[in-house]
Length: 231
Image (cartoon, rainbow, N blue to C red; front, side):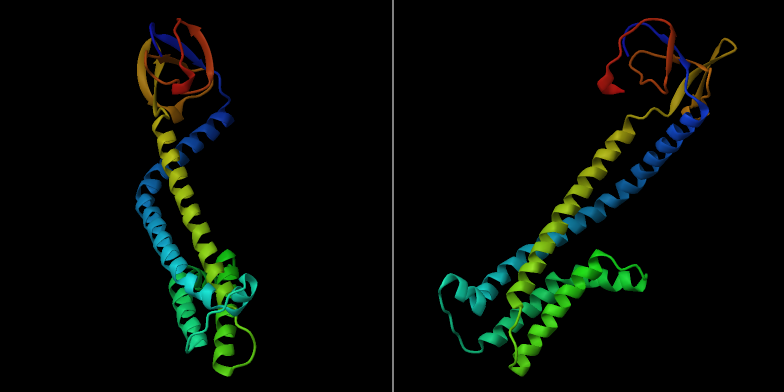
């Protein structure tokens, strides 16, 4: 707000103002929680990124040694203990790359709230243990390449999701910074600074140059310019 002071009459209904108050308090609460959560989100991003790249690198030999992939692309690679090597590579991908989903599966079942982690954890577990059975017993066809690529895709998705959550968290924290917390209330000829949450319909508020307008209302005295991008 620039130039002259402006008197501003609060014209907000009490119930609407209560919603504003609750929204402001909620955002401020989120500011503190988001600040402490940034470290956690950053850790999740690094963890998913690391697991994704390591699992993807190990997926390459799994794909090259898989009979189905060789049949589709018309090449053949045969090495000693091929099935057991596939089992070893897939075991690492399952336990290392799939750890976040297996952990989530356990937590969701403990809380009796099965969700996405339960679905993913169940899918990769069935694929792994059935494929391991085919290697040990010699019966059936394995799903090692399907297992590995599923884990890679899920890790990539959760890595992107974690980055999005962190970005949204930071954007929300910036939004909280622009919310005014106090207002200059004109009462009995005096100017008293009060929390925005105490404003009620009919109050007259002084908005000084450079300040943000604390609530909805109408201008009853004074002239100035308002930059909407700073509201």
